[in-house]
Image (cartoon, rainbow, N blue to C red; front, side, top):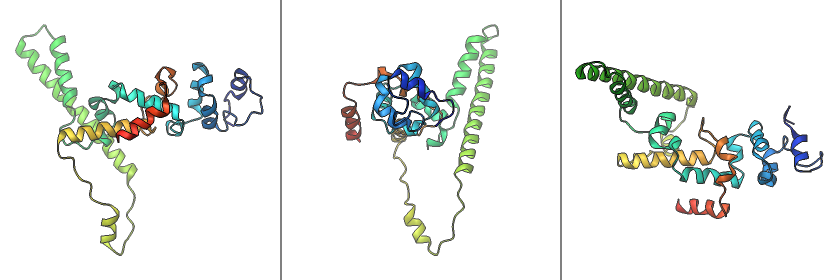
Length: 226
C-alpha cells in the first residue's frame, strides 16, 4: 500500500467497503478501469502519485483522451516546440536555435526604440546570434547527456555480419517535409503511449472533457489510419 494514499477516503466516497479489492493504492490501474468516471477531479488527480503515464496507457479512456488532445494540435506538441523540448527525437540537420534567435531580434527591435535604426539593428542581431548559440548549446548538451545514458558497451561477436543483420540500416527521410511529418507523428505516438518525458500528462489524463462518445471506436479509427 502506498504510504499516505487516501484509500479510505476514496472508498468512502464511492460507498465501497474498506476491504474492497482492488484497493486504489495496491492496484490503481485496475481500480481506475472500474471507477475512472465516478471520481471527482480533486480525488482522481491523486492517482498521479501512484501511477506513471506509461502505466495509465493501459486504460482505454485515458489513451483516447490523449488521442483527442493530440488531434487538437496543441502548441506544446507542435513541431517548433517539440523539436526544442525533445531534441534527441529530432533527426534534422539544420542549425539549432534559429527561431529563438529570430525572436530575440524581434524583442530587441520592439524594446530598444530609443537608439538609431542602425544601432537597434546591430544590437538586435547581436542578441539574436547570442540566443541562437545558447539554444544550440542547450541542444548539444541534451544530446550528449542522452548519448551517455544510452551507451551500452559492445559485446564481442564472432561475426560482423550477424551484427549487421541484427541492426538493419535505417532509411533517411527523402525530404525535410517527410522528416518533419515523421517527427510529429513520433511525438504524438510517444505522448499517447506515455513515453514523452516531461510532458504534462496530468492535465490531459484527468480531463473528462476530453472524453468522446465512443472511446473504443475513436481509438480504433486512429490505429486504422496507421
